[in-house]
Length: 485
Image 1 (cartoon, helix red, strand yellow):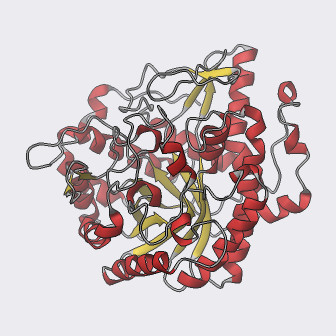
Image 2 (cartoon, helix red, strand yellow):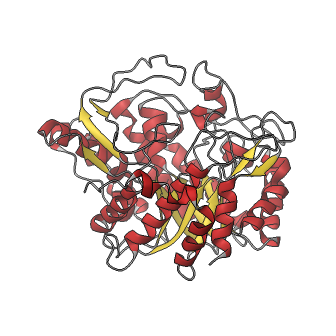
């Protein structure tokens, strides 16, 4: 399915008339529909050496020369640990229903095992109390890419799945009475692909197809964590967030089509099929050797992975257009990464604009992603859609205010596309879309882009020791929309 791109004039409506479009969007939201914003612990918390926190693989990766675009690290970042009360007030004033945050695994379990750190427990106690006081529901991810560095081998080691289950049970017992929804893992496909296959994310391994065990071990960790949370008798709903990217081939040539099917399997079906169907996708014949581990999966592991879920999180960023021919991999500073490449590469969507990171800004493909899910998984649980906020060339004025009409346009178009797709008569009408989560509340450390690509609704002045926060125009747009429900 190749949707017809919208004209530039149509795409600019929200940017020109954001107040009107905010009211229009607010009117569209169904009763009971949950609107949330999200952050992750490593990206915003800072206080890297406070309270006994341990190092994560991202702390180590950030020290490697050339791996972070601006040479920065997250040791202070938005300093959320000190500013959590102000951030809770921003959530309250924004008017969202829920806040999705992640626990810092190394803040609670510095070495990835053992009893929970009392300082970490105290911080999350304070955060949850602040959210409850402001009437904001919480969705907590157990981990968002910040695996403890002390767990040698990381997700290549099957034992990490067991450590994660122990951690999940302990956290569930500590906070299970106050959290409304639990996310076991956030977008494990990104960890496998960028962290272990291509090396552009932590821990920086370049294993290509030999990274596949990390997919299985993360999925096993998910299943074990679901069991652990239920054993801890948590009251909140339980699910996970998988990234989904619509995939198409550049041409109808057999080779392009074959590699597009391979990327669809690696990015989407490898992570969704075991969770939702209880088995891995059949390996594609031309790649049977590379994908042989899928056939060797222990049936008992697959039964553990295939736990009943209360909801399924769908992380959407952009579509992918695939063609035969190797990928040229480079670090953020332009240096080649020494790795035998994938046998395929990504082609640009020249008919669509891009964000400042080069991501395709094509809201039409939200409908494609949701329709593919509906077709592939007839028993799909209730869906919560996570939307990337989009990185754009933000420029703060002298009052730290950011006029970001392009981000407003991005959010409005993607949000309306999701609502249209799941409305009666839409291409994904059978999908029970219960909520949308916008990334992100705050400008933050954006992984290998450092602080060069802000995605927040709130500007953070990283040159100011106080980390002054200033709501952007996009924050005001969403605030206005939510006030018009």
